[in-house]
Amino acid sequence: MNRFVMSIVVAASLVTAVAARADASLVLTDGQVIKGKEITRQGDNYLVTMAGGNAVPFPAALVREVRISDDGDVPPPLPPGREYAEPKPLTEPLYPSQDPADQLKVLGPPTQWQKDAVDTSWTPTSAYDLNKDVMAGSRSTWSKSAVDTTWTPTNAYDTTKDVMAGSKSTWSSNAVDTTVKPQDGWGFKPLSFKGASQPPEFENAYVPPPAEVAAATPAPAPWTCGETLFASDAGAAATMRVKPLAGPAYTALGVPLYVAEARVDSKPRAAVFTIAGGSCKLVGGDADAVMGLNLSADVAMTQDAAAFNAAMASRGGARVPAGVDKLDYALAFVSLVDPRTSGSLGAAMTLITKPDELKAITSKAATGCTLSKGKRRKEERAATAAVKAPRITAGKDGDVVTFLTWSGAGGTLYRNTVVLSRDGVVSAKRDTLASHLGVHTD
Image (cartoon, rainbow, N blue to C red; front, side):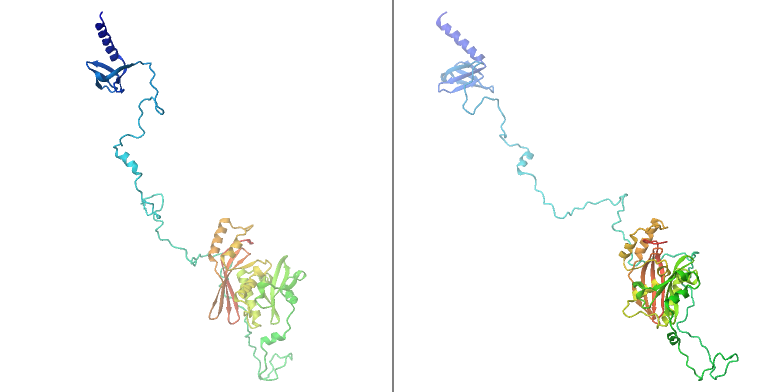
């Protein structure tokens, strides 16, 4: 085979080899290297198939060298900071998104109004709520009256006591002796004259008034009064003792008082008396037992008040002493004529002027009370509602003193009405408001 034919065969095999290589490159005469996936010689041009599949022709006159790289070739070293890697997405897209939501993100959240200091929002609620009273807030209600106007009637047919004792008319001894004893002004002796007395020397004889007669009569001793009061019981004198009745509860009366204590029918009894007009006047204590009578407490108070007025008549009448408050005088009078306070029982009597004083009494538990706990609470509520300050009212005929007292006998709260008459007569009346309060004896 001649040399020309041999060169043609080598060139053909070279073209075929170049076309078969996976990676190849052209080195141009200016040193530029063109890389492609495949290089094919077509006439005077080299067709370089790029990675994207486009074929780019290059004239053969500009090609200095055709390079064919093997799969095992080592790539040339890269400059510092460079590396061989697969294509990577950029951190930010080359072109901004066309979505309006993505474009509005750069503006931030929408503008918001600042919250008002006062919440003026109103959320309507349904008025048809069957679980609550929706009209409770707008319904008119009655408020509690400042003055308790309730009146609780009591049964007048109480067989255990005399219910008419407080309103029953009773006779009392007159303060002035109005009896008239006519005498013969002519000096004739009566037909029954036996020489025991002589007719007056003058026609108009002077008759001294009872006050002068009482002043001239010597006053009995307190011990004598005690023996006189307990004369009905022979054994009382052996156990009797007499002493002055002193203390703030009776000092306001301004009259000397005495108490005689003895045992009557094996029971302790006390008789409070005063000496006026030359005689002993039983004005307090266990007056009913001393006199041998069975009297209720109200009737005994009426009896003692009448005796006190009769005793004070010789002193010019029962009047409030100078410098003594009328309330103190009225309280002392009630303490004296109440048989359960001035008598042998000696029950405590406390003036109530405000609710705190009553609360201090009711806060102490009562032992042995016959009333149930629920009923005692009801009595406490009634007593608290009835508490009022003492009042003194000036009337036409005298002063009326109204005040409340608590008695340890029965734990009773009383409304006392004492009338200080201008003619020197004192009277007392009281109404029961509540009972079984505090520490008491039934």
